Image (cartoon, rainbow, N blue to C red):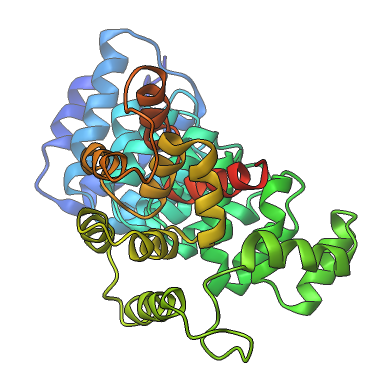
Length: 365
């Protein structure tokens, strides 16, 4: 218990807490914070009241005072939980110390705080030492490049395959993110081709050296596994076929930001098979040949992975599957084990990880 003998009795503290003088209340608040930081409180009525008085004083304290109190208590294991949570959801100068350091905050607390607050709270949590996969998955779900840069530079942060996949996908346009990913010893090897494809020549040399691969050979692997897209309209070898025309159309729609999940659904419903294939492959970020190969091997699961990667809602998937099945695009019922695996394709992956799983499925054909 905090020793208040020779200072204030609990009744005197309560009276000061009710003072209308903000300066006195601020001084009292910081004095209590200093006392709290010195020695653990117990479960006695006095110490319970002590925590409640601090919480009461916090409500009307200035931002400067709240920030000082947060700094006082950010590393204290016995700090009042209610007060620490108040700090964590406060403006970022107040929240930052406890988000980075407080042992009082649980995994569930941090996930909730990241969800219910803004970018700067998530940036602080991403810098916190030794955060778990559950926390990094939750932070990565916002697809904010700034947060992902912080996560990947945090060597103590545990990251799942799904989070790494999101980082690699977004790193295409973010040099700092690619740089951080290339320095991670825990980067899954299955994601190296994608990162390699997005990198500059100098970055590729560093990746090849770090992961002990041959640059020339790896470049060919990347070209086959990752970079093969629709036939290039400007290629002199490309024939002016119906497929090329569709590839051009889909690329044009994507560039104009007019390609969306509804485009895929409508193409399938209208039995425009080739348009459906190119549209879903473009949205999923997977070469159309790889999509076809994966569907040929595991129709239901591959379609679920592609749909999830393309941003198609899970509730629409059964209709998409039924249309394609009735058109004999494939012949596999959405039932039993297939239905269970399709559900897991949506629930068990982020969209970015679903795209990676689809590529891997195609390569194993």
